[in-house]
Length: 178
Image 1 (spheres, one colour):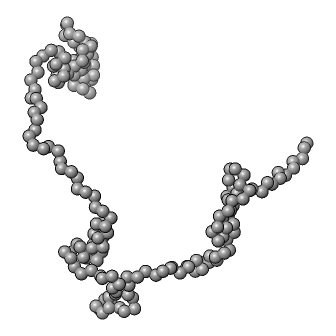
Image 2 (spheres, one colour):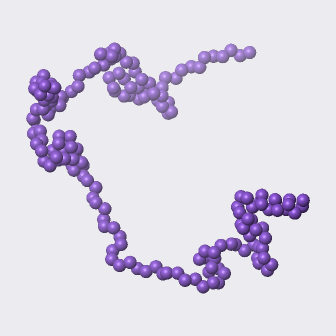
């Protein structure tokens, strides 16, 4: 029973790593140093004093470094590429582009151009104020007060002007004494 228990314990303990690794980790030969590091790589062979043969690193012929990186495109190049892609000019090998001040129209499904919708090269000088559509009345805003840490108050008026004034000192309400 004891012999079978001993064999069973050895098999159970060696199940995770293998019997050979279990034996080499737990038992050493007589005269061996149990605290010596293990391994058979090139550095361990040098530490133990064995001869090592390795191929030296030799210089490579020619220029092994890559050339300089390509220069970054300028904003002009990016804009030309973007406009060429949008209008089909630069990407399709130099197709026709819309001249300055030219007009472009949106076509109908039947192939006839729709003259009511046209896009011109000129932008409007100002956009109309759309705040009234959403119920916002101009001039109905009040002054915004922003207290500063130095005893002043910054006032932002409805017309957009900004002023800084001294803060009004308010009296703390008197508390009755018991």
